[in-house]
Image: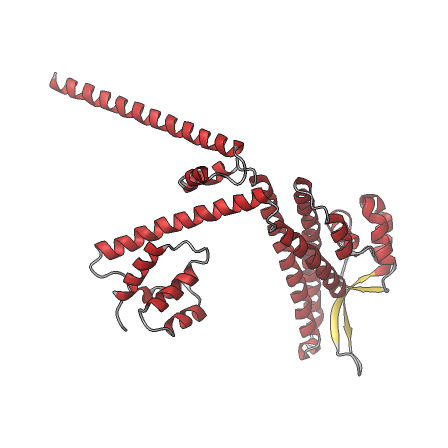
Length: 368
């Protein structure tokens, strides 16, 4: 009988606990929904009380809550655009590096080796891959840029685009080359070696055949749409052999000019919602850093008989040059601690309380 009563009590206790848990979850969900509704309905920038509420949101829910901010849509397009731009820049570098590696090989004594033709063929495959990647990345960036501009038009966009890329068809040729490579036909890039002259050093590069390109562009003109005419005009204006390095160096320069302008526009204070969105993200990042650092530093200084020696761990967080700069300062001094904080805290999350704890950590570190 006593056992039955104990079981009933346990069941009631478990049932009560489940009910309490259910109600707590229900209240949390309601509070989160209210926060999201308040964010969506609020003027920009968000009022301080609402910003503080967002700052307190647990990190796993922060991104979902911030989706209701008016700057979220543009921030997502901006971030995708920046990633696409970074990929294109890497592709430019990789294509140039591959051509340079071939040039170094072709102008070296290795060219006299019996297998040099095999190695040249291997380089051709590498160049094909890099050419494919770069042309794809260029067109991908065009798509991401259009999505960005569709959401937030820049009045000077068309004028700046025309100014940067010109009207000679180079832009259409590069992006059209992606279509040719990906959908229609594999364009082969052949190597060429020049012995040089009195005024020009020897060189080696890869070329596209103008006549072959003319034939393919005409044969597949329906696949290019509006790109056909400017692309054809560009190809027709080239020499019999089109130097890949020259083409993509010129295109890279134009793309950099244009996208530096867009990047600057995206930093404009006129984009109030985006600036507020970024400020709240930075605020959350700094708040979480402070919470983490306070927990670590407080535990080390209050609960450890001998706190960790910060000098033993600098190499895990700083570069070799940064460690050397820190070590050049008086050991365990405030100056040394401040330099470490400056390197580890580019966002400026450390407040006076954290800084005092770091000073104490260094004061308690061994002198040598």
